Length: 429
Length: 144
Image 1: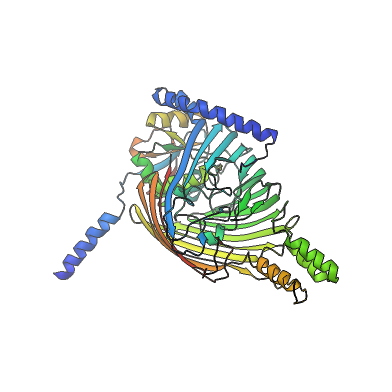
Image 2: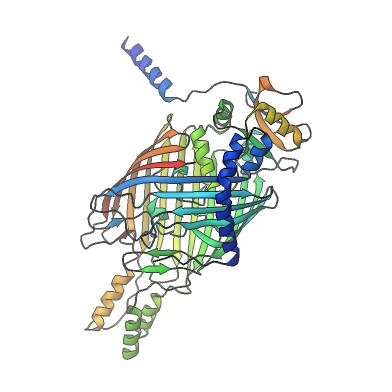
C-alpha cells in the first residue's frame, strides 16, 4: 500500500525546495570546508544537512503476542527471534537559514510503518519564523510535542533508554501534523516559561494485523507549558484530536442496529454508536518533570487519555527513568505502567441465539483497547564517541492476560508477560 | 594495611570513572557596545541552551561556541551545567531534530571570536582569562 500523503500547494513547494536544496547542499558544504575564508564557512552554516539513525535488534520472549514500539506498528517481535524491525530508523534533515529570522526545515525518515514498508516519509516540512527572541511561529508539517524536551521520539541518540516508554508513548502514534504552532518564552523567577499552542490536521495511519485506521483529516490542537530552571524542567500538556474517520469494526454496528430495530431496543443502538470514532474527540493530559545534575538524569511523566468513543477505553499511564553517568557509561533503570478503565456498556440484547452472539462479540470488541501492564527496565548506555552511543536494555513486561491493546497478534495463550532484550547503536551526524 | 590498600583501590577506581577536567579560568564576554554589565549563571545557561536568548536590556543574545574538539568548549559546558560533550550533543540532537531552537554558531579561532564580538552588540563568547582582549566586557566569571 502506498501512503497517499495529501499535498497542499505549500507543502509541495516545500518538499521540492528541500529536495533541490539537498542536491545542492552537499557540494556547498564540501566546498566550504576547503575554503579558507571565514565568510564562505558562515554562509555554508545557513544550509545544513544532518542525519540520525538507529541500528537496533531486539527479541521478545513470548510466542503469544508481538511486542511493538508504538501502535503505529502493525507487527512486532515474538517467539524469541532477534529482529531489527521495531527500532531501526534512518533520518535526514535539511535546515536552510534564509534570513536571521526565517528558517526552512525538512526531515525525511525511514522506519517500520503501518503498511509494513520502510518507505521514507516526510516528518517535518515547515518554515520557522523567529519574530523576536521570545516569539516563534512554525507553519507546515510539524511535530506533535508529546515527549519532554523534543518533538521527535525517533532520534535514539537524544534519549537515555533504547526507546521511549511503550507504556507511555505506545498509544500516541501521531508523530506529526500539518498546521502551525506558536511559542512564547518569558523569564519567570530564576527560570524561563514557554507556552506553546498548536493547531492542525493529522494525516497518519495506525494498523494492527487486520485493519488500518486512517486518521487523515482529524483535527488536532493543544497547549504545552514548559518551565526550565537550572537542571529542572517541568511540563504540563493538554492536547486533543477530533477523529475524521471510523475505526473499521464492520459489520458489527450494522448488525447491532438491525437487531435494535427488530427488537425495538435502544441499548443496541447506543452500543452501535459507541463503536463509532468519527466526529468523536479524545483528550490527552500530561505532566512531566526532568532533573539532570551531578551525573544523574531523572525523568518522570504521567498522562491520562479520555475518549468520547466508547470503543476506546480511557487510560492513564506513567513512567519514571533514572540514570547515572560514570565516564562514558550510564546505567539506568525505569518503571512504567499503562492501565485502562473498562466501560460497563453492554449491547443489552436478549441472551438467546442469534442475539447472544452479538452480545458476546460486542463485549469482546469493547475489550480490544484494554491495557493493564507494568514494565520494569534495566539498561546501560555507552557513549562510545560524542556522536555514537550503544545501548543494551532489558524490559520485563508484566501485565494482565486481557491487556491486549499494547501488543499485536495476541493468541489465546497470551498471559500479559514477556521479556524484551534490545541492543541498539544510535548515531547522529 | 588492609584498609590502606582498599582506600588505594577505591581512589584508583574513582580516578578511572571520574571524568577528567582541565582547570582553565573561563569567563563569558561580550563586545563593548552590548551595554550589559553582568549576567547571572542562570542567564548564561538560558542563552547557551537556547531556552531564552534575550539579554536583560532587551537585546537579542547571539552566543558563540568553540569547535567540536575544543577543550575550552568541553570545560565551559562542564562548568555551566555539568554536562559532557556527548550529553551536550544529545541535548542539541533533541532540539535540532525537532526543528526547535538552534545551537550557538561555531567559531574556530580566538581571532574569529574577537571579530564577531566586535562586529555587533549582543554577541557572547567564552574565553580563557589569559587570552582576554582588553576590548571585551566580562559578563560572567566562573571562578569568582
